[in-house]
Amino acid sequence: MGFFFYTNYNSKKGQQLSENNHASLLFWWREQERQVRIEGIVEKFDRNESEKYFYSRPHESQIGALTSPQSKGHS
Image: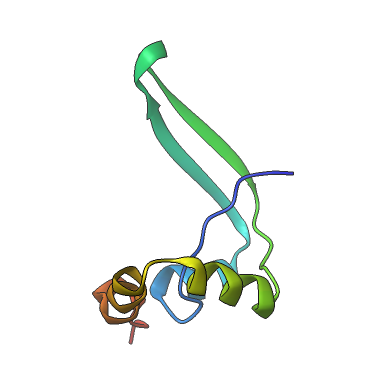
C-alpha cells in the first residue's frame, strides 16, 4: 500500500511522470510543526481504476478538472 494521487495523464505533470517515475511529495504536518517528505516510485493505475475515481467525484469537480489549465498538456 502507499500514497495515491490523481492527475491528467496528458498534463505537464502526467507527461513528466511518464518520463521519470521517481517522485516525491511534501506536506506540512501542523501538529508536529514539521514538513514531511516522501519519495518513491510512481505506478500508473489502470484505466478502469482512474475512471472509477474520476466519475466518483462531484459533477462540478469533474468539469473543473477537465477545464483546469493544469489539465492541459505542455507544448
